[in-house]
Amino acid sequence: MEHLVLVLSSIVFFFILLHCIKLYRNRRMPPGPTGLPIIGNLLDLGPKPHESLAKLSKKHGPLMTIRLGSITSVVASTPYAAREILQRNDESCSGRTVPDSVAVMGCHDVAVLWISANEEWRTIRKALNSFLTHQHKLDTLRELRENVVDGMLDFLRESGRKNEYVDIGKLAFAVALNQMSNTCLSRDVTSYESDDIGGFKTAVKTLMELDGKFNIADIFPVLKPLDPQNIRRQAKEAYVWFDKVTEGFISERLKHRVSKLPRFGDMLDSLLDYSEEKETNFSLVHIKILLVDLFLAGTETSSNTTEWAMTELLLNPDMFSKVRKEVSTIIEKDGKIKEAKILDLPYLNAVIKETMRLHLSVPLLAPHKTETEVKLGKYIVPQNTQILVNAWAIARDPEYWDNPLMFKPERFLGNVVDYKGQHFEFIPFGSGRRMCPGIPLAHRVVSLMVASFVYHFDWKLPHAREEMDMNDIFGLTLLRATPLMATPIPINY
Image 1: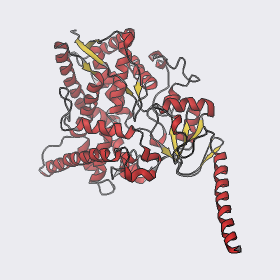
Image 2: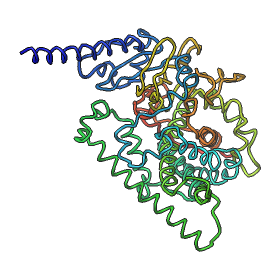
Image 3: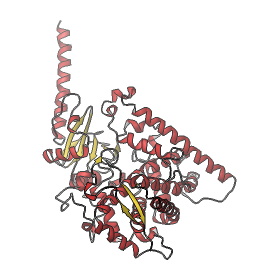
Image 4: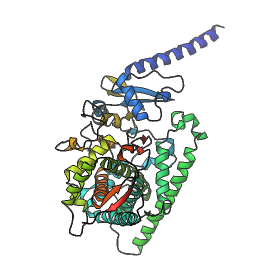
């Protein structure tokens, strides 16, 4: 009997100790809203988590703890809080939380977005910088991107002749997709006339939607084998499709090289050269997954920004005219817009920046994870804690932005604030070692599309400007709730 009492006492003492440790650690964590048993703060989020978290932060502070099911997260909602995570404690907070829809890829552990910031990750980043985002490489491949825009202009002129409305976001997505495919593979993978060619657009859209969808299996990992929302199965189908297609591209290019045929000089050629260097640990698997990453990350965000920029310009004719007038100063004799020249247009750049600020493509930066126990301000955050940076809330913080809900490109004229990760009131691409490596390419793609839309066409909306739906839908990216439809009216100069 005494033995039984001793055992029961020990069990009770153990659970009390665990509870005390948990309470102690929670006291050291940032404050946050009280959640319900099991589900935590799930009901506090609603359909637009970035907005709900911004409201909660006004009550609980710039660093806030929330619990979603079994996942505890720390949310940063001000520039100061973001700096604590992304700069002062960059290395300690550089881990990744991998969604179940991504884990099904199978090779996510070599994907630049999800891999730990280790030596292998540095090798992949080096390849990206050398063969895609370095200014010299971007300049070398810009003619490929300009040719894609020329094809888009032909399509728009024909649509204008037929007096047809165009889905600007859908068109921008096809342009961004073909610019990426030409940069990487020297070929188009979709067209403007049809919804899709070969399934590329469908696969990209499917994965972007699934990766941004709330998945109950992520907050209750015990449910992952059941896949209650069918997200894992759909994602696997899309990734399998991508795997076969990218493997086909690589195999085709390898046969081309064996045959000693002329090089394409695109990114795939450069990556294959890099993989053949003895001192690098860069394989064909790295190339395949990197191509998938580029098609996913380099299309949706660029097309969203372009669609929102055109939305604001069509709502503000004076701004539209300013962009057109500015672009007209750099037009070539053949009437073409050269990518290299638009990068120095201050008002166009201000419009792009303001669009990224007010209509942030990625409202919550890809989830970070603490690699060690880390001190954030006066708080102690345990190892393996998920960290969310609410870039949307930061970009609308009235302490840093005058009239933050107003679209005002002029705020960026003569302003040193940029999106390269050093000004924490404006971090659309993140900051620190995990910030998006594709900033230079995205800047060129979006600027060239917006300049081309504005300079070559007037646009007729199917409704009055006052009736424009400005609502958005939360996902991995913030999409317009209603597609931007307009009829292009070609301008004859």
